[in-house]
Length: 379
Image (cartoon, rainbow, N blue to C red):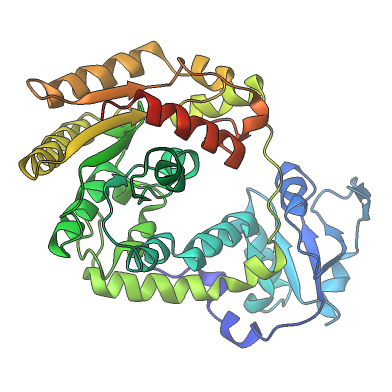
């Protein structure tokens, strides 16, 4: 795995400090967004920009470029789409590469994801549980929106949520097979398979966040369609090493801004989420889902397919063609099978205060929705 050049020497800079002094390079939307994530341990000394006419930005003053020659700062943080050119410019000015940070929000966020190790945490929690009757799979919609504890409280059935951020149908099925190998399906009667309208078009290993498949290693030693010159084991090793170097980004930019929950924002995000059309991936995912359903039915486990709700603006932003393609694929996979499909997308609306994101419930919304789901399932 190629390492990004500006990270090569950061290992020597990772001693923790009470205060980090940084200089922002850039005075546009990227810099403005970066400042929203600024840690309490950071003090911004000012900003640099190649446009001499910009004298003030977000309350900070423009600095003379001569400041880069003294040592009274920890890092220069490049917040610009022209980051490659600015990086080279700083090197030519004599700034050491280990003091230059690029794309801070992205690297801070992926370090947080890496550090959270979602699957390992869930698997370790599952080891302390017994006799799980209901498993829940899916992506972040289902992880956030279905509360497994509500099942026991409402109907006396033990449930466990194994949905994860970014999880696809392939890893949903791999997890089910892992549960079977570990003899953890023997008490299971129902399996909620969480899907969304772009599930058939989605393959985690082919996305820009494909590195997230390392969360399943060593539980599932299958890298699916990841393209790498290395073995899966070597890829995991190199990725973890790279992520550890990204820790400094998370120290500097660890805030989580509040999401805007509005119909307008929902339509914007829907345009991004539903902009998928991958026929080869659709074909493969149909094969996988058919195998997954047969796997469960062969073990006398009832599959229940659940599509989660979202706020109205997000729903309206989903193209009708995407929904139709989803249902064409789903009907092909479920033909002749007794499968309950519960689609709440555009059919279940609640107050926006029950969402923390345009398509993700907060705890209050999740509890309310889970009670509704339990009522709708044909047990």
